[in-house]
Image (cartoon, rainbow, N blue to C red; front, side, top):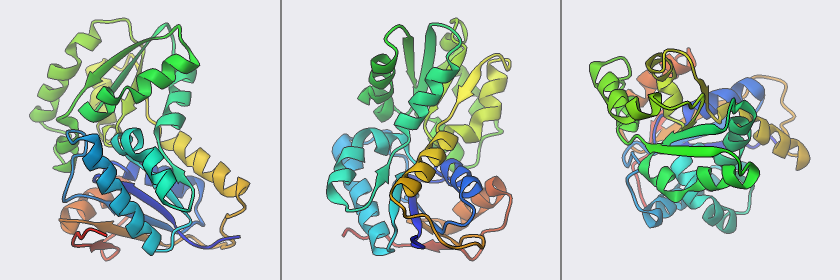
Length: 269
């Protein structure tokens, strides 16, 4: 038994989709979330920079005495997972592998689409993994770089969001794709709008629930499940603008997190 917290990080608010699923599946675990809101988005940055940022955050979470790190960011999972596994002494889980497994289960025909940041799409992480598991699938990959700032600025229900979807997804709408992987943890916050864009005729796959299941299985396999029988504690750190983060997080989690979010002025470790 291990009462240390689970550390979860993302470039901003998007990783809350993973945080929420972990909390629902593991109500007694203590959770620490870090959103790198000062440096969001990660999707337009080089692999070297993403690896550097991710390692800095992982070291910060280690200082908080976490027992596991969950990279709740597809870009960081694609570009920095192996680096973190080599550099930290605790288990590290990304969101790509669980998301791919869920997507393949949901594939309704021989085509599947992946939408994500430029860095995630250019890395080929999803495309390559899908092909390794099911080579017969035709994978269409579409970068949608504006979706992250739209979510970070809480502009999901605006004309700007509609125009961005039309710009990125109109060609995809003309294909026979029935399953679309949301290859960015910010994108589920646009799930309703994306579904409406496709006239509610597609299956949208996000990796949050599958990642939460993998976290649970890893805790059990390593025998580091908490012994607590009361609701776990929650702490939130951001590198900038705690008020904005608190506003979005409180609405998404359906509870007030005011007072739980701390601004951590960024320093390099």
